[in-house]
Picture 1 (cartoon, rainbow, N blue to C red):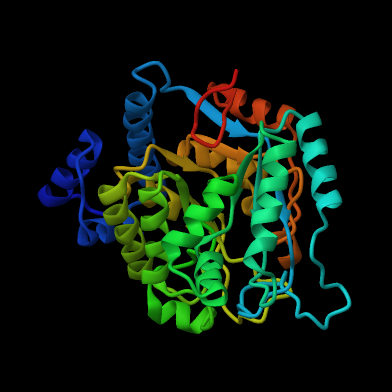
Picture 2 (tube, rainbow, N blue to C red):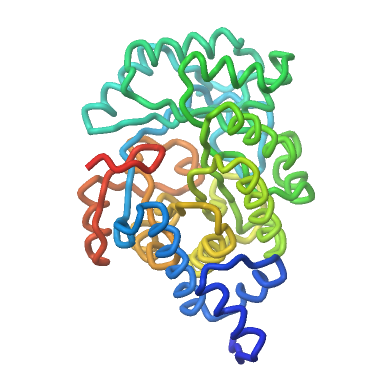
Length: 365
């Protein structure tokens, strides 16, 4: 799309370059810029954000984390149309992880230099609160050096219903048992009209944000996500970004923004998928709009190594995890893998300095 710059657009571009805040209408205008121009603006905002985050030393640092996705159960009763991972209790391949299996996974993670497990599961209708607390306590007692980054907001909304107690009580007890931080899974698009179409039994937008608000208030940081490229509009994506920004203004508890595209294979959701250019455009817009987020993570897991690397020029300052294990998007046809050597090579090829980090973006080497 050809864009002719007028005085008002030039003024908007200058404000973006200077690091100033934009509104939703301005974000929509930026969305229609040529991809390379939008990427340049996002890269500028990356530089400004990282300079502030690293006190001037880290403009050219790009980070990664060594962790493992552990899905403690694949039994789920919300039947999201975009998900190929869930099973019912009656399915032959339904499972609940044993403590011995968890131990083996964590031991292997540690042997590979890992510092964290990302623990999520389906919404199992029969697991008790004590089962979760016992699991957390077991992990923390046996592996105190591992951060448990676990339980997405939609899981906590499920827990509130099953345990029949206030959100503050559940999250507080999980934290006391060993939970260290919360992933932003289940964010999808924070527009209820969209959520009712793709996951009508899952937590709605206000519920998702309430979990983050409570968690941040209790001292637990979290990531924020967006899964796009299905039935939403560009305006819906911008509304999603706006809700994240408002929440971050309030609590400052989000560590990073991560977006990825809908993966269609083996799912029930009939929607056209989008490609790499749309992914890069949306990530770049996210970096510009989320001016209060210190980090943006590239989604090489859904896009592949090459596009994941290019995303470092479109606002991302982090390559995410090497993904020792990943079972959800791989069920939908995405099977990309990466090693630490791959991560470091991709970062160095762009002239950046690679560093392993922890969940809070503290450099470990």
